[in-house]
Length: 480
Image (cartoon, rainbow, N blue to C red; front, side, top):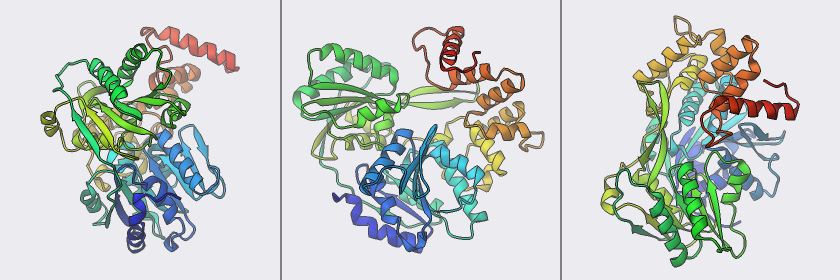
């Protein structure tokens, strides 16, 4: 077994968790925390044969983590190590380490608030501060306080240096820090980025320069799918005849098989250019990357209180995110990071990104708290849900019939809370079923919730419903 930087601090982590029920682990990407920590704690006396649940922020990261952990034991996934993600799971009667996505744990807690049989919950990549992770942590801490007779230990693992703040949330929990092992990364600054500038030409020019000047594979950070498609189209033209370069998109809307292709090592004699969103920032490891090209942008969902809708804004990343991205070039050998902005602009970036709970639509969170039977002030939060946004979420739930005049969950609200969908979508599904239009409601929910099945074909809803109806008939399902 290859030695990883995290191995040096595992004794301190074991000691911390043997003395306390909470701990914080700070370790940069590539230190090995995801691969090593669950296995290192599996046979600790205090765990007493109970299981470990580890949260990952994305489905691909959860599956990849389970596969790496199982390979360390020379076992298939589903034996000692398994995973549960949306629409897929692989666990067995002997499974003691379950890798799950954050929303899975939040919903499991509603059915099993005490998490019976679980001795440790690990929140991996907690620095990403997703809404589901914040909710799952708040419910975990509350449930164990009220319902557990035996200890339920909590470990927060973060790649950024906010350990003291996390420690305070957990009652001054011990903080264990790993320095990691990152090779030097040469930062190459670009010309100042101009507001409204189209980034694709500069990205393409920089990728071509890096392919000419540097060895190894490239990881290119772009804000979204549209930019990935445009850059890929331009690179395909520029690299025509280059059989040694493989272009791979990587974003959350891809099928898992396509995402796996992007993170696997490049075939022998080839170099990969991975065009990725921030999905590749911390929670995934892409072997062979020596060069990072960073456009310095990310697409962030922002809730607009005026319209009651969520929009995607393209924003400058934080300095912490830029550091995480650059570190991807120095995992296995010295690397290079091209930043497409100036050093003076870099100094003006925010130190850290804003937590999702401070800028998101809180309707789903409000529904889950109503199901739990608490108000936000009853729980422990790193950042408390903003009162105005939470009040607007409660008002929406009342208009949907999920809450009565006292703010208590109604039977309709209970049914909504049990569906893994936004409250608006859950209401649509339930009302459609009650009106005898369940199939149509399901098709509409799919069109509203998932990626567009006719991307670029205009906004006609009828053509999309017709396509879904045709696929339903082909599969033997009732047509709309």
